[in-house]
Amino acid sequence: MIPSQIAQAQNVLDDAEVALCQRVYDHVISVKQIITDAEREDLASRIIQSFQHGVKDEDALTRLVI
Image (cartoon, helix red, strand yellow):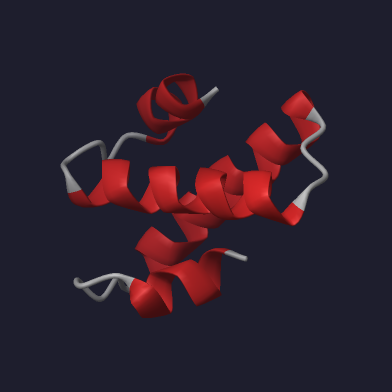
């Protein structure tokens, strides 16, 4: 899910940034047990937008979107 959302984003993320966003996404999906595609897409968008707006710390990003 994260890579498709990144393709729509204006700024290109490098591999390490994609991996960080993916870890946050995977963690939140498992903790909140998100199952619908709409919720997953919303989460991916929020993670990427927050990252692009400067929330670069993995723990801070996780706390923000949980």
